[in-house]
Every structure is written in C-alpha cells, then in structure tokens.
Image (cartoon, rainbow, N blue to C red; front, side, top):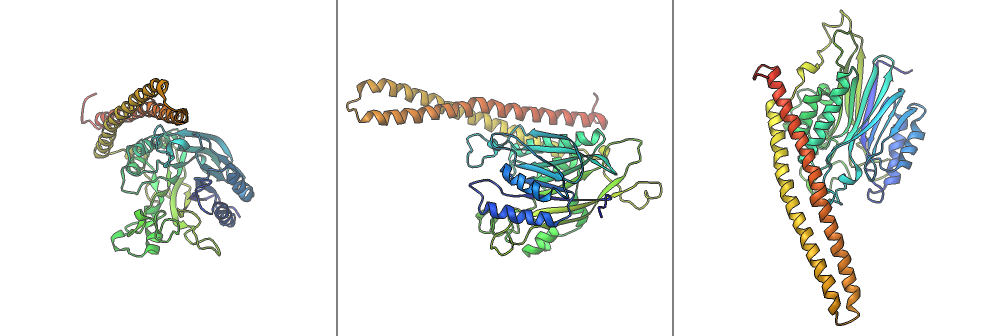
Length: 422
C-alpha cells in the first residue's frame, strides 16, 4: 500500500556517455533491474545522455512512476531525467551560464550544457513540491562551479519563497566543506539529509572504505568502485561525498503547514553488478526517505525545528571568499583572452604569408601540403577568435554578473542587520 506520509528518493549518476562509458548497455540494464525492484517515489538520474536509455528506464518503472521528464540543454543534452509517482504540473531547465571552456573538448562540460532541471509535482499532503535535479561543473574548486552553485541556490530559494516545498537531488561535484555546497546550503536554506541521519560522525576515526561509504556517504572515487579504484586521483583516499539529497520547507508566513524531515539516508548500488566484476556506475547512488508530519499545536513540542528563510543567509566570510575567487578568475580570463587573440593575429599573418608564398611554389607536389597547412591555420585562427573574443567576453560578463550579485547581496545583508545605512 502506498504511504503518502513518506517520500523515498534516489539520485544516481549513471555514467551514460555513449562511446566513452564502458559496458554501458549492460550497466543500464542492471541499473534498471534495481530501480524496478525498489519502491522509490522520486528517481533523479544524471549522465543519462542517450534518449533511448531514458525511454528504457521509463518503460520499466512506469507502473509505479508514471510521470517523468527528460531534459534538453546544450549541444549534447543535459543528461538529466526525473521519474516520479506524483503528477507533474510544471517543468523547466535552467542552463548554467558557465560550464568550462569550449576548447576543453576532453572535459566536455561546455558542450553538454549543464544546468538545473526542475519539475513541480502535486503531492496529496504537501501540495506543490519543486524537485531539482542537477549536475554541477565537473572540475571542483573552479570559479565556474561557484557560479553554478549561486545560480542553483537562487532557483531553490525562489521556489521556497513562492510557497513550494523543495527537494534537491544530483551530483554536485563538491564535498560538504567546499564553497559551492556552502552557498547552496546557506543561501538556499536547504537541509542536507546525510548529516541529519548521521550526526556527530568523526571522519578521522574511519579508515575502512566500506565504513566510509556507510557512515560518511561516500559516493565517488571510492576504492570499492571498480571504475575509479585504479585512478591516480583516487589512490590513498576513501573517496568523496559528491551526491546529495536536500529538502526545505516553503516560506508561507502565518500558515500551519506539514513538516518535512529526513528519517533515513544511505548509499545504494555500491556492490558490483550481479555476476559481473564491475560496478553499476562510477558513482554510487544516494537514497533518502523524507517523512511528512502534520503540524498541530500538539506536535510543536517534540518535532525538531526546521531552518527558516530568515535563518538562512550566507556569511560575510563565504561571500568574500566567493567574490575573491570570481575576481581572480576574471583576471585570469582577461589574460587568457589576450594570449588567445595574439594567437589569432599570428595565425592570420601566417595565412597571409602562405597565400603570398603560393605564387613561388617550386614544385607542384608541394601544393597539397600548402592546402592542408592553410586549412589547419584557418581552423586555428577561427578557434582562437571564438575562444578569445566571443567566449572570453561571455565568460567575463557572467563572472561580473555573479560578482555584482554577491556584492549587492552583502550590502543588503549589512543594511538589514543594521551594520550600515541604506
């Protein structure tokens, strides 16, 4: 029997990039088998790039989760999908303004158009609930990831301020102590399910990889994961907690509304695929159960307080750190664009020399070589014109927007807290 007083969620990065991810078709089938056996109310998948794989999952879980959405973004798609038991009444996809460099083809973040996918469901007890699924920029600690976090936090905060419950899932590519998570937690007012369910865990006393997974919520770069165990960046570590399930109460002043709280969270899909010697994905999955409690005068005394919008603001230190990182990246971007435009000008000069030099070619067999060289130099000039001028200005404008947003936010907090006059 369906229990509407609990919401069971799972988030999983599927590592589903076609032609790149290993054993992809088999792994997708094994993942589907596990999802079919589960009783989740919400499934959020990341890196499910192939639409046929989304359809495969959809057909398998449709009896329990009849409502779903596959999100489109960028040149290669967002890689995000949400499946749910509850009716979807609204959807949206907000691409992040910065996702790495176009010239970083190996990283690929710029081409896939990462962003914040969201749906609004109609829950029988909570009413409207906005569910987010995201995959932040992959290179942790980079200013682009700070921009992602700020844009995501603003969306989540806005959802709560218009009176919706909020649930956030995804691969955030940052550990709990890093600045992007601080921005999301403090500005959006989101509650992380893991520390609620596992308070006061001393990570310095944990040395066993399995214990780290079960008590610290390690989902990536674990020695237990066959896809990352041999990687140099994972050597000598217990892994990282990069995947999260968040939740938040809506901002409805003067109304008595149900309280949502986390009662269970655990890492799933941490074993190897049945009968195989490889893991389900290069990330483990993260499961969480949220309980809904009707708030009355009798329940106030024994239900733990839930963070409110008024209590949830970024500290001055966090804002200053973010502004400093973004400002430094602005300077780096300016210097990089200058070098790239220099390469563009030099490429044009070389092309001009080649064009003039073709008039004095001593032998006919040299002509094809000149043609190939001309094509290469034309590509080089075009690439660095785009990278240095078009993307360079794009990046700096996005950085400046975020810097000014944070500066105005800091000034506004000072005014509200009486530390300065308007």
